Image (cartoon, rainbow, N blue to C red; front, side):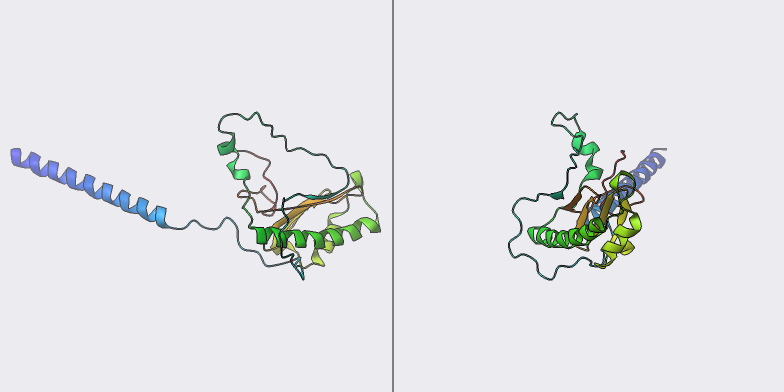
Length: 197
């Protein structure tokens, strides 16, 4: 009887040690494996001929017009606010990427300014999606660049950065930023997720 219990105890111990070792090994493999990229690399578009050698100091959105829109986030944040909104984080940009992005944004604004000068804005001063898409396509930007156009809004990934902004009869804005970790479903990588977890 004593021998049977000892054998049974040894078998249970062996299974436990094996399971623990497998768990440890899998955990180590999972930690050492590199995570998949958050989005597929995009081809280049809106490529500037020349990129400034000195990146712009403070990253300030370029604005023409009057839009005054806050992000609704105040300094008085609930505990765990950062963790709960991590899905809205953007990829960081190097100074070189930011400089290239600013140069691309300038090209995009020039094309969109032509749309504004041609006139013909629709409801709420917004231009038709096809006109904005045509302006961006003149710079080589298309669906493969995660382009998204909504009423008076545009976003595109140039292959380096996101350029997003508003184009209406009264304003033209552009912002250079990194792709969102979890963008708004049904859009490209450059549209902030308005939902929640």
